[in-house]
Length: 74
Image 1 (tube, rainbow, N blue to C red):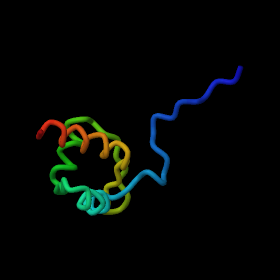
Image 2: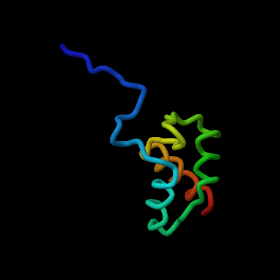
Image 3: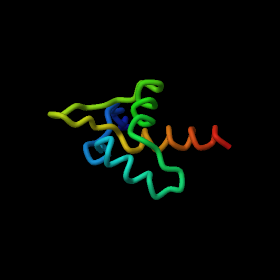
């Protein structure tokens, strides 16, 4: 039986800048600021990559944090 390797890091196509994530969440009806995203990264110790001046975070991870934040508001 083959085992599947577990990769603790997201795939490159899932990584987006904080500004891109903010812009994508703008259309959800529950917009957030870049500061909100930075707070979620700190609070949940989310994986980020820094390249030049940009910070990249997993969009999937942010979607989970966003879902939790929206659920806690209601």
